[in-house]
Image (cartoon, rainbow, N blue to C red):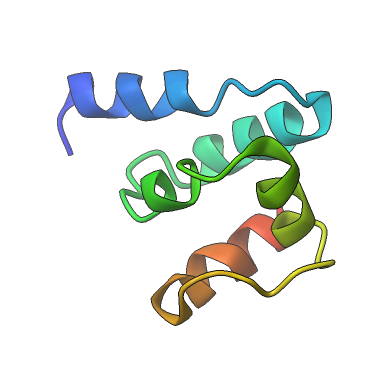
Length: 73
């Protein structure tokens, strides 16, 4: 992942929910080049927050590891 792609990913992590902003900012510090995160960022804020908070398992199975890392962030 090049610098421009990392900056785009960082920008997409800016969300309307403060809770998501905090979790995603922490995540990017630890995993700055995780391109799989981009697929989750296509979700609406409330759906993404439910996944991160562990209230929903409505995501593609191949994203299981990303979700586990987000939940641990």
